Amino acid sequence: MNPHLIQIGTIGVDSGQALLCDPCYIESEWQDTPFRDIRRYQDKATGRIYQLDLMGDDQDTLPDTNETFGNYQEQLPTGKTPNQHLADGDWEKLEDPDANPLGEFSYGGCCASTLSSGSGQLNYQMGHAGAGVVFNTGYGDGLYPVYARHGEDGRIARVEVAFCEEMDATLAEEAELLSQLKQWAATFRKEVSPLNPDYSGPEECKYRNKPNVGYREYDEAYNIAAEALSELVLNHYPEPQPQATP
Picture 1 (tube, rainbow, N blue to C red):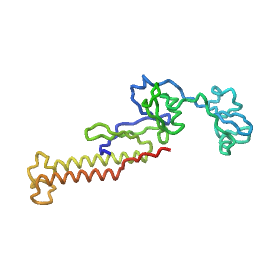
Picture 2: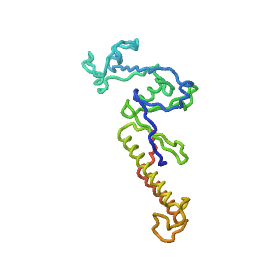
Picture 3: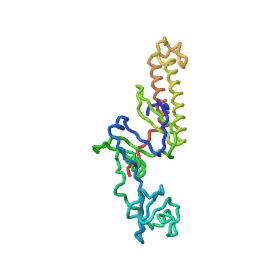
Picture 4: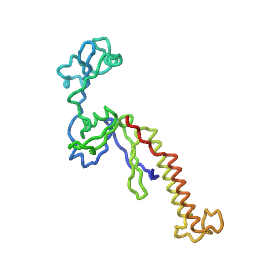
């Protein structure tokens, strides 16, 4: 991990998900496929098919559906709500043969991925991976801060998005801490390191703790301090461990 962290912006979310991709693919690879949300269940005892109709217009109701319901708490003629039927094991979910395909680089494909597993790889139109990655955004819609870690050469090495207040507070605290540490390190190098052009000997060093300590000793002391500082930061903010694949 590199200790150069700053907030670079904010991302707005209205669909409970975010997409990471190269902007040039929006025009060349993006497919205009809407999200198809068909939720149907079959009663194991009677064989009747029930379908969720959120809009109440039966526009997407499939022909073989026996009955629709507007929400999962609606009381049905069976005397139960859909939630109760599902909890009791009365219903089994029917797969939609025309559901949005997983991996399609489209809004429908994004929704299919996040609803099925919380995240997913999106593919190019030729079928191979790389068009983008989609994922759920913590608690859903909102404005989320985006942080970047910069390498020693100033290039962005990692980007992180805080999708919950706890993570936002942690990253903000880390950014502030690392900013202070960076200022301290700059001051340390200026006043201690013999690489400072104004340094003419140990007598002029503000942090001298021993008389007659020469160039190499101070340079070594600086390197040891820098390594200790990096270790401190790594211990306080460890690298995330890879999650086991189920």
